[in-house]
Amino acid sequence: MPAKFARPIARSPASDPQQFRVYRMEHEAIGGRHYARLSRTAVVALVRGICRNYGVKPPKVGWEDIGRWAAEWREHPSDGEPMIVFSTKKRTARDILTVTHEVAHHLHYELSEGKWEDQENHGPEFMACHMSVLDTIRMIPVCAMRVICDKWKVRYTDPGSTSSLAKLKRIVRGSHRPKH
Image (cartoon, rainbow, N blue to C red; front, side, top):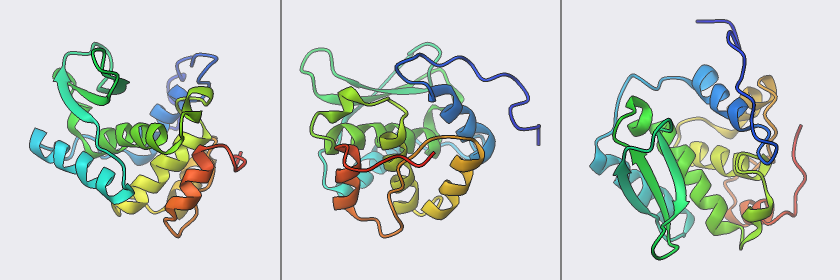
């Protein structure tokens, strides 16, 4: 295994200062990205299943060449509805970690009642959503993600170990302070 941060971390934009640190943490600390690829049907089923579990409307799911990214959450250009677009060119587009990352963006959007616009895309509130999703699907428990985030110096607001949807809503609406 290579040394932590063997290469320098790309400079993140000022509006999202830990963007590339989160990507690096996911790649180096969590890994497992090349062991299995989900089918397109399984990706859609996972997105819908997670959204159903959190009681939010699932986003549209699309596939296209989106350049350097494996996937992205965005609002559909014609109707403003949320959607997740997965790359047709990147191998990591259909791994489970990419799917959970993008669904966490969707949860952040849906649960925040518009507050997401004033928050970092990969900030503490987003990380609470991502940690909760990983715990909910039994991939990585919250207690393990706390250790990983602390080691990689990724800020997060702790969603707790009880999978409380009410607490997650309070977090993304700005009622909790981040863990540094």
